[in-house]
Amino acid sequence: MTFGVAIGLVIGIAVTGLVIPYVRTESVLTTSATPRSVGTSGPSGETAAPAGTPGGDSSAGGGGAGNDQTAAAGADAQAAPGEAAPGPDRGVSDTEISLGVALIDVGAAKSFGFNFDIGDERARYQALIDAQNAAGGINGRKIVPDYRTFDATNPNAPAQAACIAWTQDVGVFSVLVESQWPAAATVCVTGDGQTPLMTTDGVDQSYYANNMLYTTQASDNRILADQAHYLAETGQLQGKKIGVLTGDGSERLGVDNTLVPTLAQLGYQVADVEVVPATTAGTQKTSVAISNFKANGVDFVIVAANVILAGPFVQSADRAGYHPKYGLSDFNNEINDQVASYYPDSFEGTVAISTHRFPEYRAGAPLAAADQHCADRVQSADPKVLPPTNSAFEVAMGDCAIFDAWVAAATAAGPNLNRASFAAAMEQQGRVAIPSTLDGSFGPGKHDAVDFEREVAWHKSCTCWELVNGLSTPQRQMEYP
Image (cartoon, rainbow, N blue to C red; front, side, top):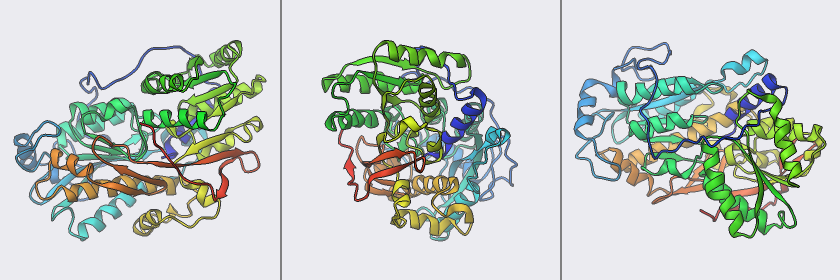
């Protein structure tokens, strides 16, 4: 999913004048020690509909599928991941399933003059839920959503508050988050909260370890290992001195544990890793990162950072007369159609690999079947979904992707729906069509779906990413773990 990072980038541009700080840090977040969630319990600030009303926000301790009866049933049904629970789980009653649903707020982007119109995400989700309920729900149980809003430009506090409400107060069975959910909140939901979470964004493989996290995008590790093999196989690293641009926190895990070792196995050494937190502090230090790459003779930079760093860094390097070759991938949504216009002319011809379908639509391809099926269900609730060139389409496709995968697994889990049966059903889905993304699969030990990608290139003529050889560009399987 690409929309949320676009918000981060433009705000970074507005605040810093296209300059991002350079700070070396070893600070990372892992799931090995799942800290107790920090935040305020209770409602997240949404105006609540009456408790238990389908489509309404349940207040702390509210009704619907998260009522006292359900909570008591869930308490009796607690089981460690992978173990058989005795019966329906927390958030599951005889007639209802409580589902936490995160809604993205464009937040501060508007105050900077940027208009990311993602349409009406709540209306789209409600259309999906209403249609599923009308068709019998999940094995006769109605889906009751508990909506919580978080600001994609400043997500930490509202995401933590939503997590606490869902896992401690309401007691939902599962959580759906389209994208931009912070790492600490992921730990809160899947770690302390022991609640299945489905999102579009892949993260470090350590976050998947307890069978509670499922993503439609590949994990950071699989993306980076695949990128290293791709760059080696296509000869792009031959004779080059390699540098890596990355962020701090969880991004650094994939670089240290996967990218650098994989390159070494392939016979390529990394000359310099520059760690650049995506904050506005110390904005003058970007030039230090560029100077370090120059001093080390780096002429090929692998970007393993959020796009909030990629665009501004390339622009700053261009202004400084530094023009290395670049390698990008879907790591942290770097291949992003909406922010492609921020690259300078010197970026012309940069080749990358991506799982996204938007270059197909630019080349004239009709909507993929999964995309059309999504649009058919939500466009009446939100006419902004089409055409497939806007933010509303991208977010809507992500909404459908995680909702459909969740429905498939919850249904396959049977009448005895609990976390163990849900996890087993997720791992039996096999190959799946993912709206807005090439196909993927869920299986035993594989909880990050997408498996295919295509070569894309950035062109000045459209300031956009296009398929390298149009619609004849072959799909490439992501073969590397």
